Image (cartoon, rainbow, N blue to C red; front, side, top):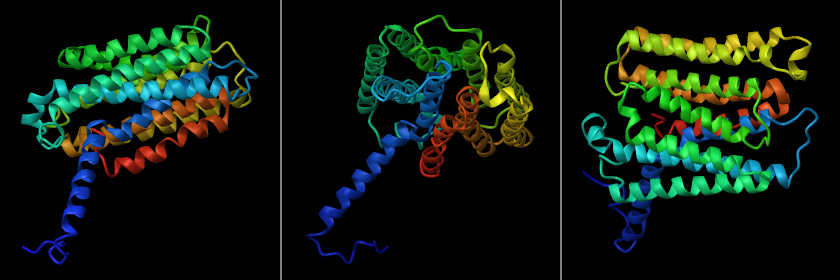
Length: 331
């Protein structure tokens, strides 16, 4: 069979082919790190940061800008560390179930993946500690250490136990709390409710995706969908627990419930299609949509306390996530 490079002069081939191999290697690493999903972690921590700012808060480019940047980098590195080390620990299982992935296919070596995962984990913790420096207190460093520990426990052990989805939900909850940790005061009930709502939602998503590489059981998928609905309902319940004036909601609270109902319906619709036809392709599509919906949940939570502008800033994270999701698998 003719190759598209057959007509090139011999002295040009060695320059082009290494570039092709290099591009393939870069894509393999991006697949290993589930790059589209990283933007959902950014949305979580950004929402947490914005959520705890006081009424009348104004942006301070030095203090707030650097603190938020450090938190976003820390969250991103820890997320990528988590998925890379997850594949390292699951290598033997993936060789049987998903041999096309970067590690079992040999596109990325085990040594390189292990080195990358641990380096990202350490860097994530260091950036979290650095955020504490700009925030003026050590709470971000404490939360980032708890998050890194939870990630390791999930990857190395808890994932293969019945509490695996709960552990993943705890990781996402801690990611939101990492953003909220800039507040140098005890967290209010509303803070715990919002962080917990995101955590519960992710428990459902993780349970839903647990058998995505094979045909899933309808009962499992239906129950996991119900858990996601509970997470959305907890977030919808937030205004009833808030002790502060919420400008976007105070004049027309029904807008909030309508917004949450619409968002919940969009999430559930794809899940119902997978319940009706629980084949891997349908389940993966539902999981991808549920993961992307995290950005929308974070945006509406931010809208409740910070208004349209900051909610829009979080919602913009959907653009790179959706664009990269067409090129790199999210599950």
